[in-house]
Image 1 (tube, rainbow, N blue to C red):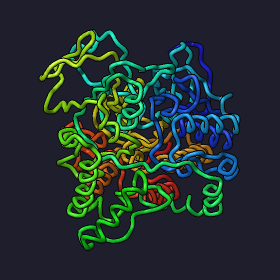
Image 2: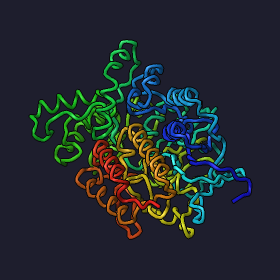
Image 3: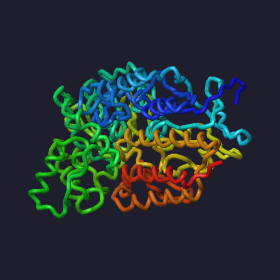
Image 4: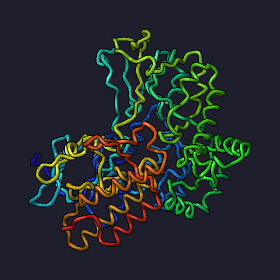
Length: 531
């Protein structure tokens, strides 16, 4: 640590949805707070994800803050599902409206955070040589913010552009180029149609096909916006108490019990209802394998009808896992783009990548010349961004080594062995399997109230109890296995040190989780040690 040190009550890492609300809330509670942000501006994920077609897959009105009624009324969303530029403008507006930028240090990375046992404080090191002494550190780094790349032989020899959807620079022009897009998850499904419009040729490299449903996006009219405003406070409360943090839940009934014609009609209606529409067709689709199979087969039939080349359709059709056990993708023109003559598809399970040369990707079947490679390969989910920082607790305990691939925390809020360190949407919280803004607001409010409660009682230290942490992760994993979520190979899964698979997000419901967190706080922070 350096001698150029300043003191804060709280250091927040990250200036996305979580970091901005943390700063606003902590400031209102009287805490001297500083946010450290690696980017040149606010936005978090929405600052970096500037790839063509980047868009939210939750309706704009729902994917927004609810803590300020004035903010809700003075911001006007233009589309049902906002694109990246609009979401970034919204977050910039929030920062300006609440005068947040003055307490955010941009273009700066946290490299280390070491606990000082003698003072019960964190020593936070920055990449510019400065350091901050703080009583509390809050990791608002996001679940999906540390890009992941495949380990392809020879990739360092490639002479063209190498891009990742999660860290997209400004000014990229792929016009007329031969482009490889690696991955058909959410970002690949969004980017491929846009890239195909300008590239001379697009070669899509796919490992696992995903279910993708129409976004059914449309502009929002003044009438639409006005209609929702009177009901918005009530809808927000519904979302807070709901299973997944949405305004509207699943339709009642069981798919397997429905008559064939009724089921087909409902699936058709829900197919066109937006991103989560098909999964909400019946209330048992994420719990009952037979019911899920009906929905999955309906979606497979849609793919066969939309993709004209039977061989492409076969490769794009998910098999072997329940619909929804991998993230359901939201598509605008993806299947149409696969019908274009300048788009080809390589299934790397059947035709594996052998190496990358200066100007081509070599698979078992031959060479694919490319000028640019776009990796839409996702992130080191939930753990990666925090693990990238050298976090050390008492006696030099390393968070990265403790976690490894072992996703443990208490409530997704705190990690045993690391006092006064909080995480937002960590493992064991609803996080990525909820409307994440609803979960973020709940996390932020709980953390801020906890820090204020410690101050009010004259306490300097809070730490999750190891036994409570183990019990919570076991409980979370047990609930997950009552659903179909763990049945699919996905980044929702983590590994413990002894090789066991653990389902990382909490699927017991946003409302149930909120009630548990509230009960813990009201009981004096059960499962925590306070000194």
